[in-house]
Amino acid sequence: MRSVVVGVDHRQPDLARRAASLVQSLGGSLVELVCVWVDETAVTEPNGFSVSVDPDIVVTDDNYAADVLAGLNRSMADVGLPWTAVRGAGEPSRELTRIADEVGAAMIVIGARRGGLRGWATSMVGGTVAGHLIHGQRRPVVVLPEAALVDDAEDER
Image (cartoon, rainbow, N blue to C red; front, side):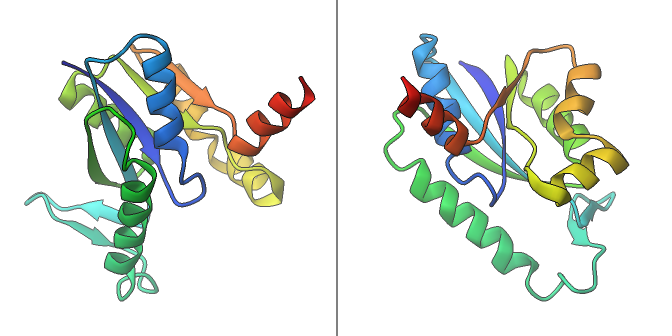
């Protein structure tokens, strides 16, 4: 069974479901989705444990991770493909690449960067996750637009 790594977060809760739909439309019934949420405020210690480096998040970190996982469980309830959830730590493009290498992923699917001033500032300072992945990846990277943009385009037809 082949794997597809899907980067998930709280800003695009339906991304994993849309990635599953894409995989199914391409005839990928023998595919497992590996849904990866990367905690950018954490680092992985040599013993394998992830710890937050942001003192404001230490108290709520586990609750936040549980919220992301609960949203993923709701979104993927009846998707029709096997899937797993993995929590990563650190820089998202490196962590997605590491996990994709670990599972032998056929591709990585991520969402487009968020819009607005914060999204623009983030991409200007550090670049986008998509940009980092595309330039340093040996497997295909698929960037799905925000669901609202897809819905608007379908309404125009």
